[in-house]
Length: 178
Image (cartoon, rainbow, N blue to C red):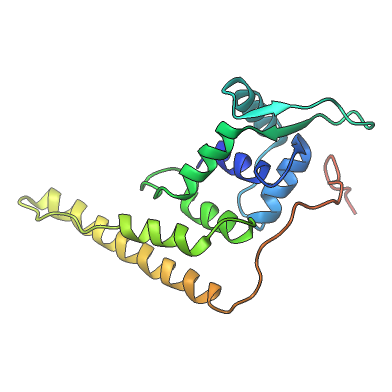
């Protein structure tokens, strides 16, 4: 799954510091795809190296904010308008759709339409192994179609699902044992 592009998509909403970005990611994915703080910071370093984000001056609390660049915004747009390939790791498609549903300015219906258009049946099998693999692909494709249908049904409820960046400072460290 592309943590890199997920974090970049959140930064497209406004500058964030690392731990805030981690909290936003978990809030937008319902905590179903936890990411550790170290991974966030190493990803931010790579995004900065690649010219997709820029580091800002520390604020009064010493927090270093990262802001998306024009190239970063272009990468986010390309990601949301491209289908997810099977076997992409962590459930990238589910996370991508969850982010699309919560990020202002992202057309979740279009993200779903792009993914749906990438679903295609496999060709005819001539051997038993090809048939077995082909059957698995057909079943996976049908399951993905059913899931996309369900997401569209949920979106059709008309509820406003977009979330602005949270202004709440995320708590650091492990929860206290009771």
